[in-house]
Amino acid sequence: MTIKILGGGCKNCQTLYANTVEALQKEGLSADIVKVTDFAQIAAMGVMQTPALVINDRVVSSGRTPGVKEIAALINKNRE
Image (cartoon, rainbow, N blue to C red; front, side, top):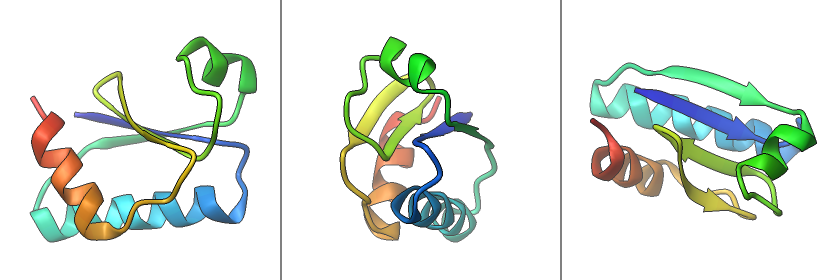
């Protein structure tokens, strides 16, 4: 499973990263987590608001910072 955190590195992006790591730990899962900070790459994915969360190349959240429980649910729904 590949999870991408899209954003310039702001506080909300850092929080999204930390929440994602915590959600993976609570679910007992592992994933490759990639930070994407290049706005050309972010726009190419169709994301106009950051932070954004991408699971297995599917944008599942953008423009907000979901909590740990919501991220865990998104991971379980979108994992392969």
